[in-house]
Amino acid sequence: MKVKTLKSENSGKSLLLAILKGVVVGLCVALIGILVFAFILRFTSIPDSVISPVNQVIKGVSIFLGVFFGMKKHKNMGLISGLLIGVLFTIFAFLVFSILDGAFVFDKTFLSDILFGGVLGAICGIICVNLKKI
Image (cartoon, rainbow, N blue to C red):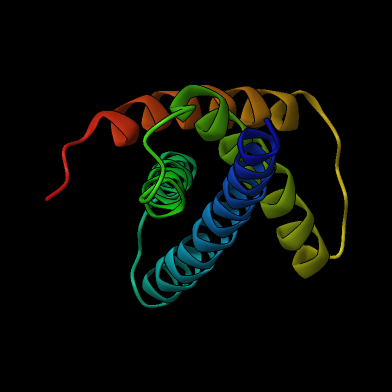
């Protein structure tokens, strides 16, 4: 019985580290994506209506890559792990970009971003866990 308990404790710690790794990878991808997009905006005349959809795509790609690299070695609990990575990524991204902007604005957009991040993370978790090893 102790062997199973010890194994499950190590598995839980490993899963927690995988989730944290996914959040960090997602944040790094988002920061690089936003930086590249800001550079493009600086030197081109892209209309303002394009900014919001591109930001959503950057968030989506960041969450997918965070879930993919975070869950690479785990082949179970994809839905829950992906959901947690998506929600935590959204919260930490909000904090990081609010600090960079110098203002914290809690509104309906933030709540919809959390919902979007959670749903997208859960879907990506299901996909990533079910991918065969390449």
